[in-house]
View (cartoon, rainbow, N blue to C red):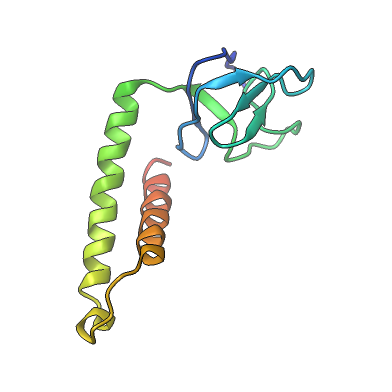
Amino acid sequence: MAIKLESGKRYVRRDGKVSGPLAIAHNDEYPFVDEVHDEDYMADGSYIMTSLERPEDLVEEATEQKDTLREQRRYEIAKVVLTALISSESVADGYYPTSSAAARVVELADALLAELEK
């Protein structure tokens, strides 16, 4: 890892998700905490003490432009997945997506977006 974390800033994780603003955790090994996602970080952005790369590792500072572009791509992917779900045979038989199905659409959109960003 080659970044230095700062309190109050947001960072992009290795998996493309964006952290909440980091706070000081008052822990020697994990001095920063993302209170939004309840995740602790080492000073260099590592999620856990290991030489292996983890999806939760923080890799760069987030910028509003990156956030906006990512959210636009996420929306477009979710729209395609939702359109496919609605046009599926189940909907033709009278089944309509529930909130859990909508949550699954968002999960699929995030997974597809992560693959596109590799």
